Image (cartoon, rainbow, N blue to C red; front, side, top):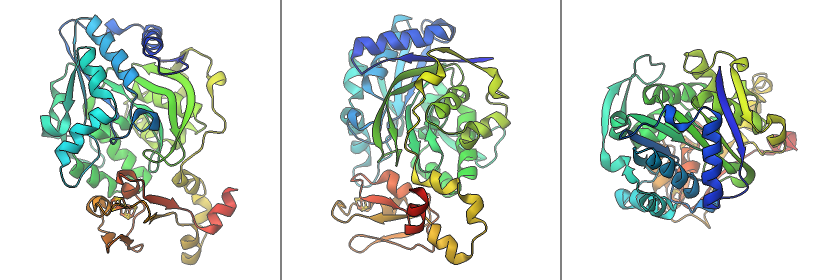
Length: 382
Ligand code: SF4
Ligand code: SF4
């Protein structure tokens, strides 16, 4: 059996968050199971991009501070790491700034932890023991050096995996080039397998999810914050993601990172193996949680298979630029894994080449790239 705890926490007031984190971890057996004196604990946050905490793009600093405090109280060393998905000119400065803009640096230093910016600490090439998509990956060195890893994700929707949680959080442990390689796989099934390849080498010991304010709609960068008022915790990231998927109205089998991890023996072998402690699952389900556009097309896949090429075009979800927001930074052009974007002077998409991976949407610092749904899809989704 694996246990997932659900604890209510109304807001990000630091004392309240600390108490809720402590309770959530106590319910699954206590922090001393994984945090031992003098051990090096890597707290892997979600620092997707340099956005203030209220945008719900990144793990909230109050939660990060609470976990650093928990680690320090047990006499262990707390590293807080990630590398923001940013690029272009001044990459390193922008990544460093992301820790400040997201409010992480201040709280980590105050609680006696240490920031580890993966892009500065470097990467090491390793073989994935039982790969499906990625035989070799470059992994952030602190991941290999830590005694224990704690996954600290933000609960958000995602255009490719539909939901990003404790497993997908480890995608940030590989450098941009490897992330692009995985994004080139484009299809949710293959991309999810690549995510699990990365997860399989990270071997986290604990996960604590920030679902006080989650992100719904067009996540992981441009969705809407939505209040769920809970913190989840588990020693098993896959079990935690399965419970998170139920809270947000997905069917567990639709989150392919969970399915693939289960198939590979990296999580529970059935839903019956997951025990929930704390709040009752039924009481915390958000029935009207908004799904990302890609999910809505995914569930209609069987219908799309019956269509002609014209019909397929009518159903295709595609990226489009809002030029009033575009700063012509070239990041989308640089990050597109198939070279489907050229700036002249604003982004022009080659829709024949586009594989609908929505990396451009995820990376755009101005949220200028929107995901458009054709008329027919909009009608069906009403
Ligand atoms: S659409 Fe976004 S990423 Fe692309 S050039 Fe404009 S601001 Fe930069
Ligand atoms: S244009 Fe955007 S959605 Fe299309 S392949 Fe390039 S990055 Fe992916």
